[in-house]
Image (cartoon, rainbow over all chains, first blue to last red; front, side, top):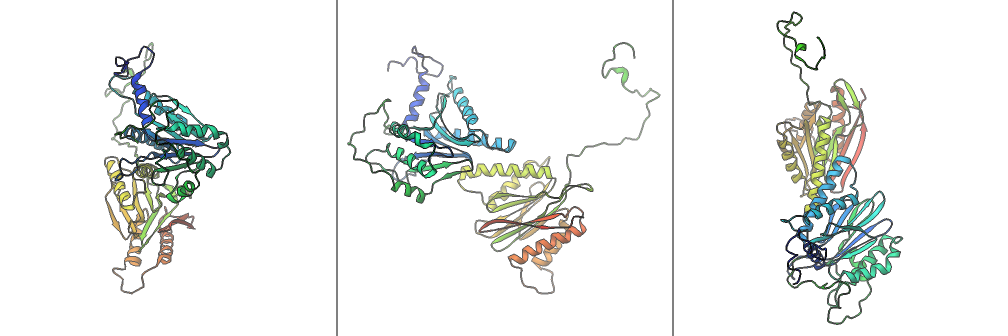
Length: 263
Length: 241
């Protein structure tokens, strides 16, 4: 691999002005199953497609409640995600204890980003191998942010990360003008339709492998199996896809690695 | 003093040889970190419910801070804590417990049981063994089997599950009445056991009677009824004197 001289650690620049270890960490995010988020004027919705290691295993949790007004959807190394979720939960708890109010979503995202950045400027540490979609509501309304192992963060109207997320992004880009004024049911439907686009021909969304979380100004809620089933029943039927995986669009290697243990 | 006078300079300090310095009997001045804000609370466990009662008066010495301050905090859908003693410690203790319970719910994906909270309260109190929370707590709720649970605590976390208990400035007045009316161990006259409504009325009467003799109890009372349906609260008046 031609960059082998420059990709050994986080403290080496490549001649092209890149820190390759950080970019490799971002590849880990793409190895996870997809998770997406979208917001309206009143709600944010997170939809995740969970992986089960084998038939015997439970589907791995992808959405974590952080506080009554905030939740994250993860893609990448689940273990790293749990560390960040714990950090965010403690920060929110502490904020409530001291200030008797909900922590500002954007500020916490910036804190997570700064924490992530520290791991990219250290010879003896590695970056977090997980991307978060942070969904939350504050006094200005609902927000959706994405964090990266690089320490960068972005705010979105709608976003999808993880394996085959480009298909979901295409759907979201097509419809996002509707999201602002959608009611909660329409928003959930859009989220599930977008997620449906990421599944291959032999998979389909079910209450076992899908989670839908809704956050408004008051509370966090996960849809129950019954509620989710109603939406899943209403999904557009998929056209039969060819047996081969579609060639990945802009990014290379969207398919999950065979023996990976990421969520 | 001549010239520039430095703060705390040697010339200021009284010396034993100074004729203006007179020996006086030593008096120890001490600021106490604790205050007693008074009030009374009690809890009674039923077959499948609990009743918690507490007054709402907050006092300091012979003065009243406020007539309308609750001693009770809801910790989960099935559990409340009532604390008498120093109000600031009670506030901090309740805040601390609530924060711990949020973390519990994040990690366990369900609310903590009364028995779990009971143990946690004990360890939380003992953690400050050498500068205790000046709180005398009564923890009440419905346990995982659906039965009523009442726990009594001392300031440093010694606790016991009991059928009924009381705490606070009027607790000595309350306990014997509950012994007579609920336990009935030493009663010569046989009376039927009280039902839920009967226990609620008993708690109201007990607080009212305590208010007659204990100056720190009065103004108004809160009754919390916890059962399978959840927590419901009612209020009633107590004397304002």
